[in-house]
Image (cartoon, rainbow, N blue to C red; front, side):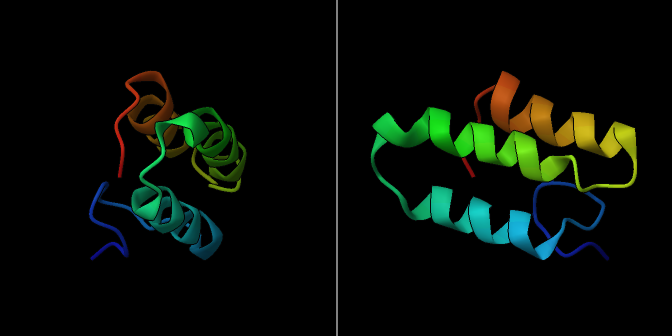
Length: 65
């Protein structure tokens, strides 16, 4: 079982913490900053397909955690 509710694979702990911080921030003004950090942290994933899935979900589609 994965350690997150968004995908069926594990995410690095630092990325999970960033997603939780993003989820708890009510201000839409910070959206770009969070998306940039999520994009950067997703590079830590070993699998390129998983990396693209995270970027697609949170950055390109703009879904909030």
